[in-house]
Image 1: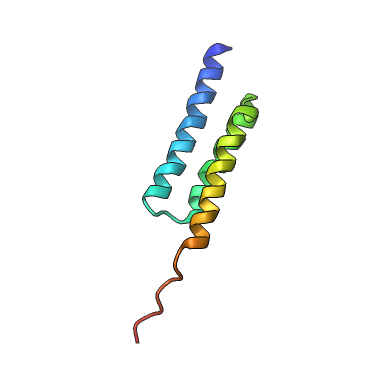
Image 2: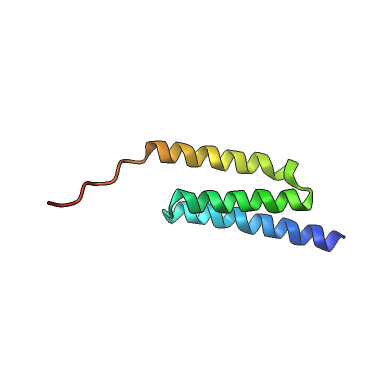
Length: 78
């Protein structure tokens, strides 16, 4: 059972780091959000939701702030 918990924790951590890396690399916000939500789903399945949900909520809030601050795309050249 402990090995399963360790595997679940590792999976959740991997998904959170993937989301963080995507964010740093400028990947589309939808993909970043997808990674964070997958981490939350994996945590939920493993009974770790209470520990992981606050982390995911913080990341999603930061992502929303970044999206709101992002400049609009440049218009196409004439």
